[in-house]
Image (cartoon, rainbow over all chains, first blue to last red; front, side, top):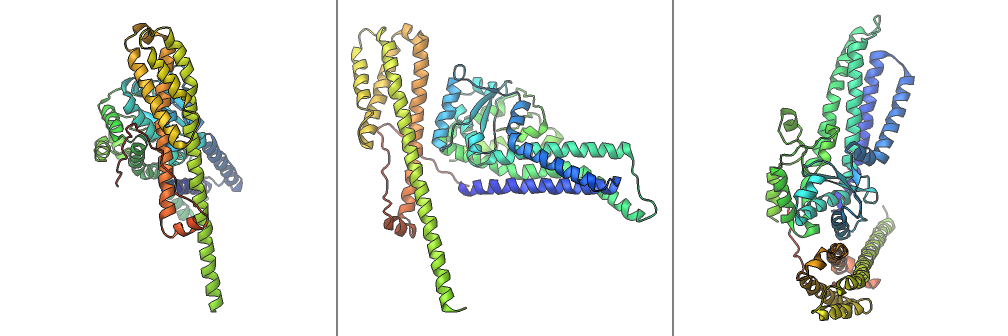
Length: 294
Length: 182
């Protein structure tokens, strides 16, 4: 378990560096394309630093705001708060903040950068459709994400990927509409090659970013299932909850696709071509089977 | 490389290992103490809730007054004594509460009382928190005890007199630990 925590902290740093390299490459390509000189590079670097610190320090707040989460109070959700508190004692972490989000789909996620600043978010649907033991299973899964520092990587990935997609979209547009001022009298063909590489990179960047994100997150779900079951000592609770999620057809509107991988199970119920290509969650059947084998 | 250097390097490695093993023993021991205080917090919480519960129930329950006296008695034994005594008193309190809530089933008016409903949720929440804090305590004791017994950390544990700790036993049926494999 502790090696997993180390790995997650390391992955956060790697993710951070990859993000910087990607920004660097994009800036470099832009520089060749538009010849704006060093001022532009410095500005881009400053923007990159600002963006990434914001995503590190307020990523959870951004995610919470984007998903319209409301903090649960003791009066209306005493049972939810009690369940979270009990399980955090079992996990040996401070009680995270508890939020609910509207929507009848059974789903939940956790965010934050460390156990001390973490939040657990549960949909109204999960509260009304799950039994006590099933809900405890789901919460234990989320608390394991918190304890293992999965949330740090996941929230970072969400926000950074969102930014990369945003930047590359701007650039693709400015490339199409802005045209290219190429320096005709020197290295014309070399510039042309760079432009092609640049365009390819700009298109690839979002895809690369997606792959980075999903490469890290599949094993994480299995591990959180297992350590969640260790907390409740009742794997059947989470297995039953996952089965209910599987048969649940309610829709949940989320502000951005980059939030999807935070949830305990994919928000998108219908399998389209794109969601199939970038599945962030292992198949529910496999997870249920693993839990029932414990 | 001269033999002196080799000896020095080996000694350095050993000292480094001793420091690391000692520190991890201290960390594990601190976790146990922290886990124990968590149990205490929850026991205290239940202790504080019970007078409220008795006051609420008193007006409704006519015949089974002895349930209330049992509860009061079990409560008074809770906050003092060693770990064993506490665990025994806590078990008694758990069963006393159980019989009170069973009795409450016969009084529809009591069951409809808002205050009673609130207390029931609070107490069952606290009950499960006690179970979870006991689970965390026992998990912490287990990892400490394993460390204390295993070679070569046991040499350091012996030298600095880290002793194995006792588990928090309970008469209540524990949830069984599960096997997780990958």
